[in-house]
Image 1 (cartoon, rainbow, N blue to C red):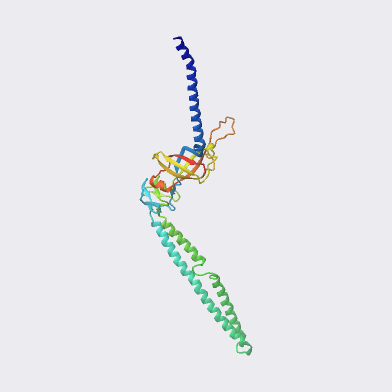
Image 2: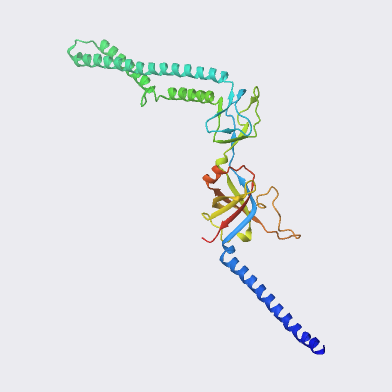
Length: 331
């Protein structure tokens, strides 16, 4: 019995030592594996779940004032570029267009008379010059009196002045290029443009949002009536911590996941560029770090990532959705 207790007493430290050795080996193996994984794999990627779908939305803004006759779309409706969204009462614009067309036609007719008058004055001048030259040649023979030659000279001077005055209205131009015609044409083009602007079309293809216009409403030029979100052109702004950005470069590949589809759907992306500053720097009231009560906060910089169009076509995204972005910084 005594020997059995002594053997157990000797064996216990040896067993404990063996267990500690196994535990140390396991911890070392795990640390080595983790270190190897970080060095060969994890260090090649930077990830964040502070990422959101964004897009450059297109505001639909009327360029003319008037009463709304028709609104052809609703919120969340898909539209294509050029589709009619809103129709403004065109009557006032049509009257202005008719007036501009009449003014342009009248100006054309008036300018044509300038050229016709110049031609007539040129003929008068040539006739007066011919008459004067003939009489001047025979004046010494006594066949023409001095009074008659003086009358011919006065007529030539009058015809010359009239020709110069007529040519001043047409010199160096044509009917189509005459300043008065160009001014009337510009007024006509403006009236035509204002008439066409009574039909408001979609500036891009996308989804209608923030519609705030109704039939019968008076709308003002320059005040937005709705927004069109080009969902096919969305991108992701991923807000990475400043200590993650050392190796991030434009052109690197990225892989993204959306909360709406889950981890089973992967979106391929490409880094477009990094923001010009942190979010805090561009906030309405920027932080004043020069004060005495300063606490360092790790800042984030937005990294813009373009998404693969085919992935977006297969799995459409909406503005504001949360994303998880992982950038491959090994290249």
